Length: 225
Image 1 (tube, rainbow, N blue to C red):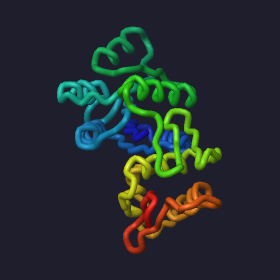
Image 2: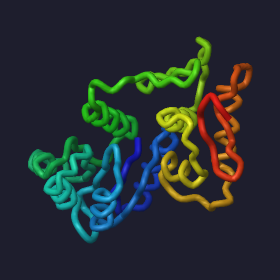
Image 3: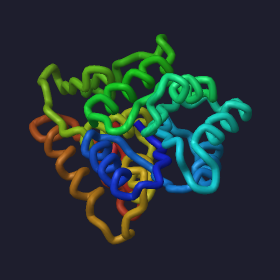
């Protein structure tokens, strides 16, 4: 999932961003309602997590503006305001779900996954394949030549992204922005490390190799180098 988080409590936001990224998702974060509105209007996200009390523009106003602009991205409202009238106001403003602080991270993650399932077209296939490599995007099962392969969450997210656009070359910067959702130092080796781990799992012992380094350009997944 590519998630936009609008939360002005830096400590709470850091905790949530860390948990979501460790679960294999990319997160953009802002503390300001106006900036959050701009991001939600200009970038495609799978789901938004919006705190009600924000500087610049309050969370419910952000949601209402998005709905007025026909942006129907699922929204989970986070708030310390938990009375019935508060929850009703959040849902009527255009929120799809409402979670009261303090909350359990596991519940928040489950609610986000449920929002994504409801938003996804039912006709979308769950299986992607390139040559004899196949993945199930719902169960996260990965097989090559019928043999099961275990991937870590970020490895799976990287593989899924590459398999959705086979033979397309992606630069390190493109992968960092699309998979991790935030900027690294251009000299970082995080992409190289994950590519190396992924290659060792999906190509080692199999033929032909599918994960290719395009010298001076980036990486691609396909049957031909």
